Amino acid sequence: MSHYPDAAFLTSANAAKQFVEDRGAEVAVAGRSNAGKSSAINTIVNRRQFARTSKTPGRTQLINFFRLGDNRRLVDLPGYGYAKVAAEMQDHWGQLIEEYFRTRKSLSGLLLVVDIRRGLTAFDEQMLHFAGDVDLPVHVLLTKADKLKRGQASNTLLSVQKTLEGRATVQLFSSLKRQGDREAREVLERFLGSTA
Image (cartoon, rainbow, N blue to C red; front, side, top):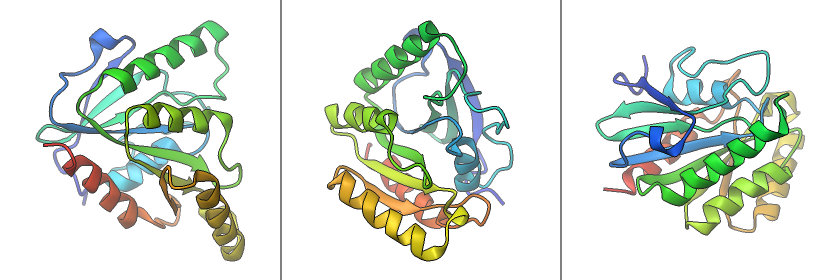
């Protein structure tokens, strides 16, 4: 049973003028391609194939808006850093994402999806920078935690917390084992509730 029975896809945007109406509250989800972003979204919402997963990294090439309830949205940002697309397209994505962060009044939080085996990358730091510029709270999901032994995962969590220096909260997460899904959902709800 989904925790968001009214959840539905709204629209995809390739330009700011295509964004949905800027009201209510929305939480963005960003992550490097192949970090498990779509799987994380599906696990948190508890709907299979809600956000389409793919064996080919970088399939999310538009900003996708999803309705979670009345004036509450989840926004799936393009996967960055891996997709085999022209530099021109990568630049377009960068500009579109930057404009999204800069202009959205309803944006109330960012879930940053990071593969625990790779740690924070330059692309993740860029997302943290965008969020920091607009005083946006960030929560990091260290995905694929099941791929590491428990001690290794705990050490990585501590290391990432140290690197973040209070810029974001962070947790272990595994879509496969449903590890950390409740904690992530609680953060999502808190972010969505932080804007009237």
